[in-house]
Image (cartoon, rainbow, N blue to C red; front, side, top):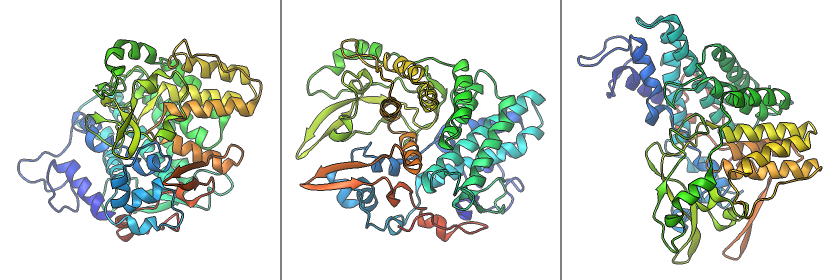
Length: 468
């Protein structure tokens, strides 16, 4: 990983060049600029194509939240292993080349380390302005580590977190900095501390959608504490986040505005995604697998069936499509998608789960139904009402999986629930006359590191967290 980290560091400091450098802030080639001002470092936060790309392809395919064509399954053994839940596949051997999930994650970390190390000593800007940029980089670094830890390592379980390994922790922009693979407990402690240090300095209003604000800090804290099964703290920070922004997007209104296009039979003309930089639900925006304006993933028929009847958000995004022998739901939105950031709907549903866990079922369902009313057509809508905790939680999990499809969160939630052992997540499907099952205790729930990382781990060692 050292070579990748070194290359990233050089790119950051020198612009678009791949020259060799040991200390990339020394000996700058003619025509390039060393970052010195606060504006220089703040500009790195705006580099959405390098530093705000959260690729979770393997997780989406494992959950079957992404339709993979027959041709892709035949040509890509890793896609086939994840999508078809092949317990016998050696996924480690399939990860021969670089993997965006890993390298984009650490490229962002390299940038955020550079900002954290230098923002407070820049030549311009007030102390308050410097602290804001520093704090924003702290939150983004913590978010990247959370994503990496919940992709390449086991989920957090208090009884084993201090003994199981997570991902490499690098806190310096120096290319010779040590790369230590820390435990799951250590990476979570680091993440929580980064956010703790950042919170006092985060602005209530962001410079851009890429810059985390105070609401984003609270929302991310709620996400992390939920993953740690700390429902009291998760609820506390969910409420604080919602006090900063509690807006929900009106998907029924979106459908009504675009129904003349959406309802045309056998037409797949796209409408513009509302889930971009100005989405009212955004706390902070980050790209998903793709960092350019594009379309989202198509989804399998079986996955489409897990949406509620009358879900305007689903109907506005996918439409049944058949080509040759393949039938799936084809995507019908194009533009920008906040698949890597944090939105209010996630926080509403964190709050709902925490309330239900505490036995406050009526209050939990009130929060859940607040979300559903902005999604389900009035003709199909009914309040979910129950006094049974399990029924309430399953309704919350279903809505959350549907709302956050194509993000890391359904994958992280499933791993968390499987480790808990009460609300286990498993899937079964039939394809070509065969039955396939993703078991709740399958090793497939942890993604292997790419070979490039294990063979070139930098100034340290890197041990795979899964056997295959």
